[in-house]
Length: 102
Image (cartoon, rainbow, N blue to C red; front, side, top):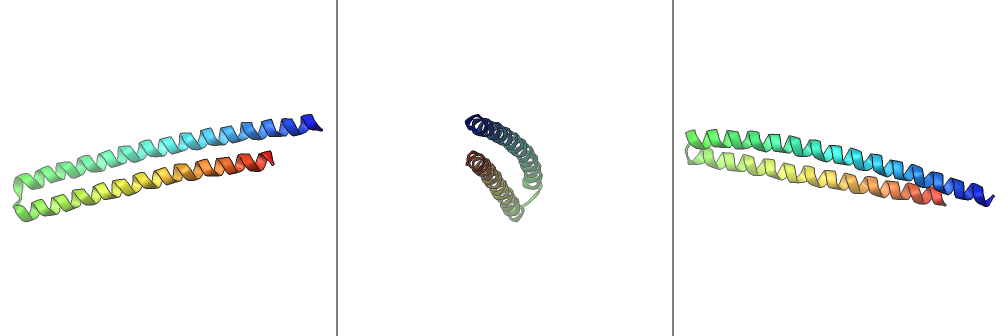
């Protein structure tokens, strides 16, 4: 009986570790993709900004700055969302472990 309980606990721990590892890998992949996308967006925005600044008057410069600021804010929101998702996945994995142990 005691060995069965220990066996179940070890199996639950192993499963939880797999879940955590998979969640971390998925989260890391999401972060990498988000950073790539954000870098691409920022690069495009900077290129557009450069073209606008070279050919535009003061009003166009203001618009380019506002657009870049908006993109940076969107990047920050995306980064926070990813971080929250990681924390949520970690929390779920821990809850799963605790349920399996009980």
